[in-house]
Amino acid sequence: METAELTQTKPASDEAKDFLPLNGTDYIELYVANALQSAHYFQTAFGFQPLAHAGLETGWRDRESYVVVQGKIRLVLTSPLHGGTDIGQHIDKHGDGVRVVALWVDDATKAYEETTQRGAIPFMAPTREVDADGFVVRSGIHTYGDTVHVFVERSQFGGIFLPGYKTWEPEHHPDDVGLNYVDHMVGNVGWNEMNTWVNFYANVMGFNQLVSFDDKDISTDYTALMSKVMSNGNGRIKFPINEPAEGKKKSQVEEYLDFYGGPGIQHIAVATDDIVKTVTELRNRSVAFLKVPDAYYDDLLDRVGHIDEEINALRSLGILVDRDDEGYLLQIFTKPVGPRPTLFFEIIQRKGAKSFGKGNFKALFEAIEHEQELRGTL
Image (spheres, rainbow, N blue to C red):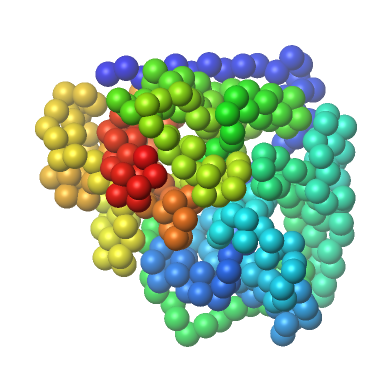
């Protein structure tokens, strides 16, 4: 089958490649209407484990946060404690959504200086945060829409999460579902803005363009979009960036932009070592997934070759398969996890493949269009 072309773009110099070393995703913070209920949802539905809490009991007066963890994935759910706050305004505009994508670095001050001198708009100057467990240095920059990157330096901290947080130990402890780490995070931006943000990640953060998809790759009879995947030097951080493309009807990116109120994180892809087991458990917990037509599986092996998994198991769960030159991957996408058709999750298992499921785009987007038609937004 046809595979996505890898289009590595090398930085101009070794200095450009190395100026912003990133160790991985530190945490993802969502601003939500009710942090406690959201934390309960991610525990019960997705198997996240309670980790930390901060709020009135820890000395905060403006907001409350709960932190849940699974594998290397940390989600921070934050709500305001009063009206008229920046957090509340973000929720009013966007609904529940991702505000912060935090990146783990060795030197948050240097990360801030390197990116701001290359044109990043400052969000948070380097700040040393201290408690009895040591200190953390955080800094941050603005990206597309109201999304920000926070650089986290935590080598001198031995606490549960960040200074100001205390261990959270509720009695509710559902088992995890086998999620390991963040594979990638996809951002939706406006018309003709994709290359602006591709250049931002290349020039300001030293990322390379890994893959490019145009509207011929990602289209159906009705809708289309374009996408480019940006990756940092060690490949631990991957940010696909989508923009709308002209089609007969409203694309999923246009729908997202309308309901989110602008650019933002569309979905978070989380990796598992056993997607059949993970998705089975998620379905048992009432997580709703997109479902492709059953005919997708009729010629699956002809398209992707030999796979280890049993076809009927994949068919019953709606799991998609794609292959590239390095191997194959399995993936499935939840329906939106809130009332607005915006943020959703992807569950992915890589068996060598480095790509993003180009061979599944048509079936996937037809499934999304079906959901849009049910919502009356196609």
